[in-house]
Length: 80
Image (cartoon, rainbow, N blue to C red; front, side, top):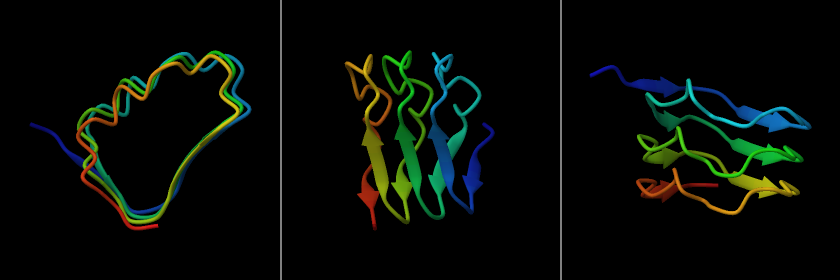
């Protein structure tokens, strides 16, 4: 199994065409912050199922189509 520990920030802002987080499916931890803002077509957070920890904050705002936090089910710690 491939796992990825990301040391920095991951930010998705104003991506009107973002519909999927596919490609992040092996990320297990984020060293700083992860933020999703104003991604109008994003409906869920599927693709982050292996994510277990965020060492900064997890921010989610103004994602008009987001109806589910599915994908964050395995997050056990957020230190922000």
